Length: 185
Image 1 (cartoon, helix red, strand yellow):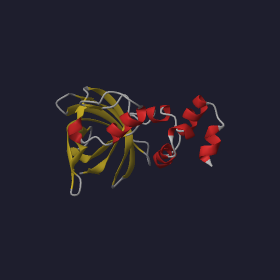
Image 2 (spheres, helix red, strand yellow):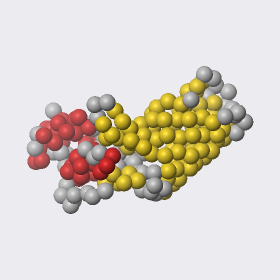
Image 3 (cartoon, helix red, strand yellow):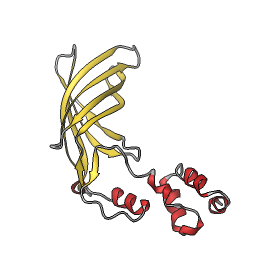
């Protein structure tokens, strides 16, 4: 079993190995008991670093697992936006096909952002440049209320007649990067 294997490894190796476990496996390993091999350091990599959000009033530090639990259970109202420049990458699909996008967004503490985007059409390699602005707002879900964040973004692409509008939910990964998924028109 995973538990028996971990008991035979040095502590720093265990920390490294369990950092690759899926969250469900890490939680299951933790419930078997501290002395059975789920070091607290394994939870450190699950706590987002260098991210757009921070806990407003974090509880005094006790363990990385407790800090992760606090972060994972945080509502939108428990977080503050950290001003700064953030890079992003992703894909957008329209009626002409798939585009890979990279860029940057500069966020203020007032939940607004401005930025620049470079799109590359996968099928032809055509490159498009865009500039835009946006804001963070509540991601309202019927059964969850205003728990999460959403990002609304309006972009002007060079050589395009109008603006593109994007709206979608924002999730934070443990490496601090954001997943923004939604729709555009």
